[in-house]
Picture 1 (cartoon, rainbow, N blue to C red):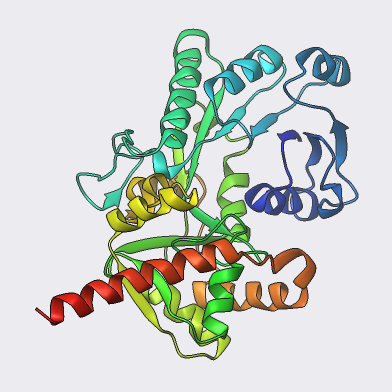
Picture 2 (picture 1 turned 180 degrees about the horizontal axis):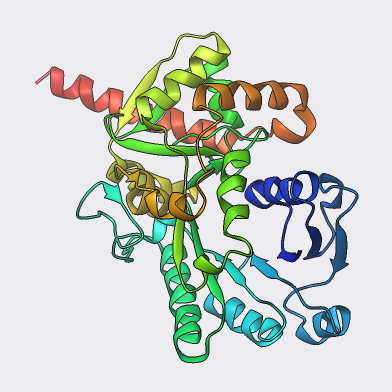
Length: 344
């Protein structure tokens, strides 16, 4: 079996590529700009190109055809329109990576299935993903284009620890605040439910869809089975660090408004995603990929990630003084307001 990955070196795709090569003996091709080829197995075939340069891509893929083409970096409908032109007739299956943030916010119920309405008034990113899905499914219905839609939720690997909010340099500054005994911000009251998935577990579900005829023309969400409150997410990180957790709960709406001053789109990532309780029903996926299950609990994944992050300061410990200042300012303003109210 032969697969082509557009992208292929991100948090999710790297784990999938490694599983295909090391465990499932697929022939894997990667099409990207070649900036992170060191994370790939030696057996991978690489096509170095800008996917947006259609003439160059056509020249480089020439007469190649694939059992599955996997699109990981298609964020706007123009990207999937391009892929349709490039790969129609060249693949038996085209898997598009959408997003679970495309589900209606807030959903009518906290249990999410593939039938949950797609609509997100808070986040343009999610609306663009919905537009991509709609184009591809239209091509499937009208022309038989062999699309499979995959909707990941919050997936992580050893290079990053999931947190509710962070700055432009990732989650390290939140970890550092914990290590230094500083308070950390948890959105809402910390009781909303969230699902976190380690990338190796995600790869099992994804590879089970590859080359699977039952997946054509269908959408699947792929997540782990473990659900945590956000308070539990942060407490698990603190436990792994061996530090006392100091949390400050802040309204998601307040954070979204404050984030604009610092250039953070928290309206999308919070109000359009993390602020809402979600529990995913993965029964549709498990019907055709019965081996899908959670093998890396969050407490285990956090320790795996912390070990890697602390051992790789140059690449994983990117300081973010702007986010630090944002947290301090939000907490200062809240404490001042509390003090003023108490003095009335």
